[in-house]
Image 1: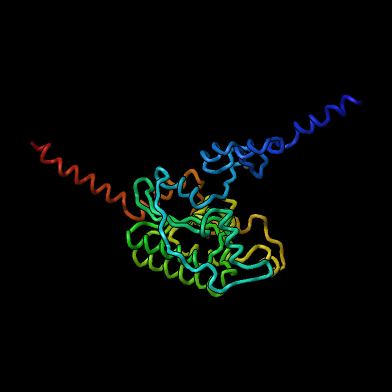
Image 2 (image 1 turned 120 degrees about the vertical axis):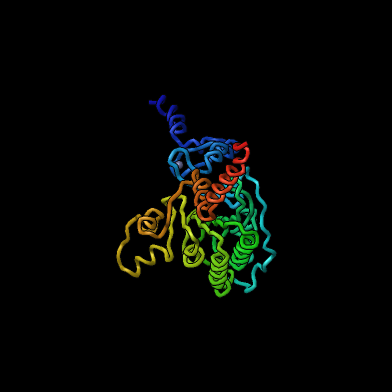
Length: 309
Ligand SMILES: [Zn+2]
């Protein structure tokens, strides 16, 4: 029996998940997925941050989003000034808001959950916003509202279609409940301005979209997309609805697939197809294709005298 005892640790190590057996240096090269499989980070990036084993769409940062969306990963960040961090000097049992804001900044390397940038999509100049769920759950503070307004202003001023990759748990009450709720109104006004100026606005869920974000900006875009059937899309959390209704809701309720089936979303588009799909939608909305056809017919008519000669 001794030989079994001697072999046991080796067999145990062999059967333990690969990540546990890797050294610290090797671990940094691999991305772990909830399916338990490991993927080399370079391959994971090439696969647009989707697991090649279970096809799970992983959440990404704003800059990762811009890198995979814009032509040649080339873009310019739109500045939205420096709104005050903590105008209401919020403190709650979890501590000072300003301290948690500092921690979120340190963790993500970004100032806020939202960024806007301008760049090309298949040669079409666009204004694109992105949100990062890892920064305060993608919640909307006055600064995020300011960022959205700056993006919309840039879009209107430069006549560029606007796209927002949203992922948000709602309004950030820690930044002042009145101030954060006001952002729903401000963003709604910005959406109205986009409509007035005939600027197409596409919103794509790049993660869960809930609360006040769904109740404002995410319901006002011209086209609503989700890049994963699994991402949640709703207002109140499922548990609150269950408590009010006093009944258990199905597992699929509030998933993008379910919302799409019930007409709340226009399309589910996998991440790998987003660039081409959004370009096609914008081309139709902007009648770019029509212009291209007209240009082609102009070229043909210009050629006529040559043919005649
Ligand atoms: Zn996986």
